[in-house]
Image (cartoon, rainbow, N blue to C red):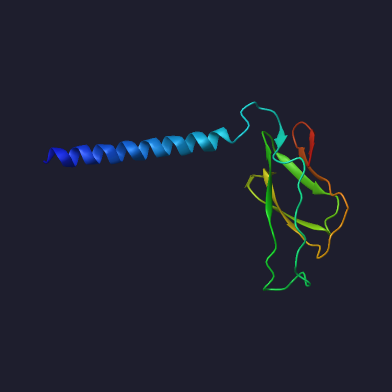
Length: 127
């Protein structure tokens, strides 16, 4: 077997392993490692929807995924007629994230509270 082929293969394999290790470190580093119950964003500003009809097939709305960490959560929203909230990442009856979609077609100064309540401790996280 050609020695240059083995060197090339080893360099490609080493490069792949380095990229994989970097991506794995970046993904794990993005999660809160302190064990505290946290929510990803405390303040969020979503754009208004340019859609006139809520059910329009050609309507494309902005979406944002909100995460809660280190618990089993139940989510609530103060004004569901202004922002649609759909489950995101789930495991069993726990929902770790929700996908938010603004429904308003014009600006509003209304504050909307989104809460994630941990089912085991009862702790409430607010965004």
